[in-house]
Image (cartoon, rainbow, N blue to C red; front, top):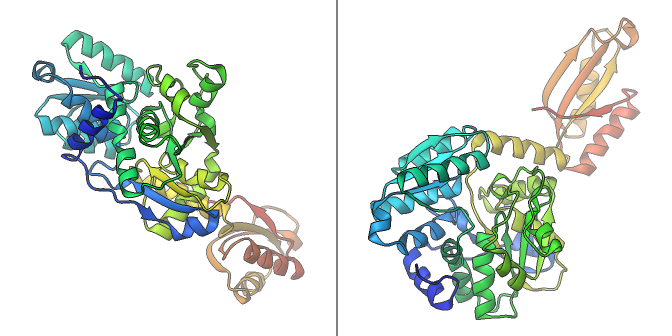
Amino acid sequence: MKEALTLAAFEEAAEQVKKVTLETKLMYSEYFSSMTGNKVYFKPENMQYTGAYKVRGAYYKISTLTDAERSKGLITASAGNHAQGVAYAAKQYGCKAVIVMPTTTPLIKVNRTKNYGAEVILYGDVYDEACAYAMKLAEENGYVFIHPFNDLQVATGQGTIAMEIIMELPTVDTILVPIGGGGLCTGVATLAKTLNPKIKIIGVEPAGANCMQESLKEGKVVTLPTVNTIADGTAVKTPGDKLFPYIEKYVDEIITIDDEELIVCFLDMIENHKMVVENSGLLSVAALKHLPAEGKKVVSVLSGGNMDVITMSTVVQQGLIQRSRIFTVSVLLPDKPGQLVGVADVIAKLRGNVIRLEHNQFVSINRNNAVELRITVEADGPDHKEEILKALEEGGYRPKVVRAML
């Protein structure tokens, strides 16, 4: 096995991954630059063939295997991006690939993995169960197991992202990198610091899955009792023990991000950059607001863009609610003609757009307040929302904001 995480290995990996990756040129973000006070660039790995950076590590790892090892077949466990990365990379080498995915994996991800020629086995309810089963199959059948992150060759392949960033923007000050198990951050941090020790590397984790942050506090790898985050690609309980020493040595800081921040970031990326970035990939975008405004050149690695449409629609809805661009208000009305028109007139005069009405005549036996009207309104933002609520209050309707449901 070739030595990993050396400059020579990174250079070799950079040449190898060119065979299976698209050129993801840095994108300058006027929107996030003006918002944060830094010069913000995106490394759009969400635009790769497989929708994520994972193909880099998978392909380089396979390239380091012998012909005899590749002929045995490859196996891994993943619910998403790594599965597609291994399947695609294996196809390029003509290897058999077996991917064990949890039974809860969205059908679109299962089908994409199959379309790259892999054999997919659905097993277990969570990744840990699928991974244990994949390792069992590897032992029984002699397959080579390709770990999603805890592998130095895999991390070397992921680190080629740093080489591309520095070649394109040699004066970069800070690189923000999402962290799940730590493979991407290990590769990027090690190469970036090797090439320029002055570059600041900041790892970004979900607040509900901050296994690397907790491990750094303890000075050793620790396992979280539970994880809870919408950033499923980085929902890892235990970081890679092979990677931890590199994170300790080369990562300057860890920032954690709440799910609510990811939701509004998704909206920002769709509206301002017309790009779909999955929740884990948005960690490095949400972290921008946590940096001091110093005019620094900051690169956020957008690690992936694989999001199913059901999740996407939910995130958009919640983002609109958080930004007060959609809200639902409840009013009680007398049970007599003309009341609905009065409420609608107040909202219309203030340019509120009614997108749903619910009319319930059975909330009370008191005919003076017998009808509950729930109105879901599209507004321009918090100020416009408050303007509409104030007008309804002044009209005697006693509005009460309730949770919006689209």
